Image 1: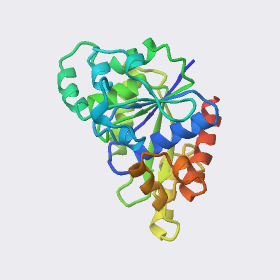
Image 2 (image 1 turned 180 degrees about the vertical axis):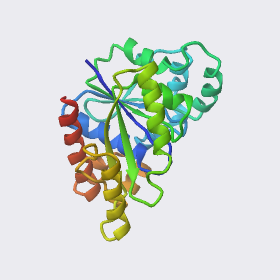
Image 3 (image 1 turned 30 degrees about the horizontal axis):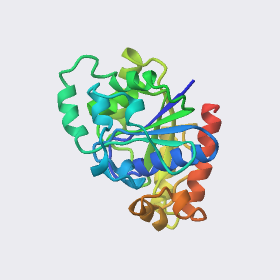
Length: 255
């Protein structure tokens, strides 16, 4: 059985792609065959792994339009057990075409189910919006992972996302579960970070990961070198935090 985890938050800049890339990297390091699906038209997970978007023949845009299978577009990264389904900005145009298409909410789910890749885990990086692509990610997933930035507006808009999850559970994916909430960009030197952390725990009792992702310059630098944090600076605070977080994910999911 493949475990499918969608990383989502309709608010941008919360460390969503950083989380998707580094969770996938550490899952693969811990021996899990992992596929990262870049389903965000910005394609940051693709470029953050050093992939040249110009050189791509087939991407997730082709999969969404059923012009290619997932197996046809997947590329092996330079790390053992770590595979990527890349994307380019064309995926934004695809979303417009999808709006009128049949089975428009379940294209991603069907593509994953038809794959012969035998992955232990599929991680989906969703767009920072409640779009048709995000809904596809929620319909395809067993679990939702919610990165939440430790800042004043952190919890704004989450109600809408949780409402969407409820609707999807009712109609299209009754087993969808919230895997947990990951506090990101924590700055232990500020009172605000601590207050927001407490607030997040109040809103999501029992669901907040013990590991928190700190504000860390090495984490910010790694994507510009096309590397996950563990390959860029494995002794940095950010790397240690993502490694600890990944072990928690494995325990929660029972991998």
